Image 1 (cartoon, one colour):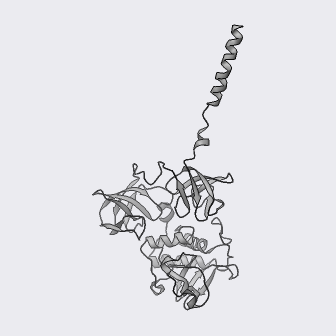
Image 2 (tube, one colour):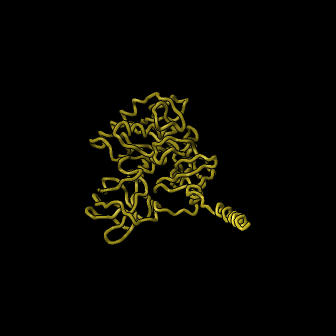
Image 3 (cartoon, helix red, strand yellow):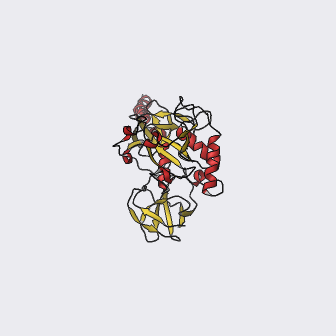
Length: 339
């Protein structure tokens, strides 16, 4: 009888023990939730070249499983699919996440840099951010993090922290390896800027007549939307990998300090950015504050008032258009060199 009682006494303990077995780490790994603000690609890997699973739409909720680095989240969408999305705040708002890859983590500077040419040290990662001071040629800085393809967060020798352009004409670095690093943008072929521009134009013209497709795949050249076409022309022509969307390309040009609002100041091979189409008449665009308008189209300037781009199925895909005294001129926001 004692033996039976002892056996029964163990049963509750065994049941209780089973209940307290901890869940696998993966099941409790989510560190925050997020809400999509603007349509963004859910990709199979943490890279702009990774295959797109689908677009996440504004208003969708996602669970953030981890922050891969400063540029990518691993997330689980509401339909259960897992993938990677940009951490850019223009695409997603988050709550509660802190992680070793976060921008607040400066404990592991990845490289040092030497200023090549005078450059602004700014309070934020934007050309609109206030200037702290100019960094002079020859100054040494510690790179705390790479915010994106266009900006470093740095600490100067006198202890000031701020943001500077990643452009190699301003800073020479050693040891920075990360998504969006110079591996993406530093492989340009040799030659002067004008020679490189002509290579881009020649590469783009090879695609004349290629059909238009909104949201075209960046993995093939059978169809293009406007930003995909521009990206491919630069990639084929000089090996420069631009951002995948027109707004990112616009930010890239601005980050280089090359933006011009007067198209007469542009050179062949420069990029041109446009607002939404509102009609063919110049009066349709009067009174609009272009500084507040969103980029909806990008083209390559050919010179002599002509542009190379693609914008609709009806237009026949990649084509050359006259720019001056047409809706293109009225819609123009700014342009500049990506080189």
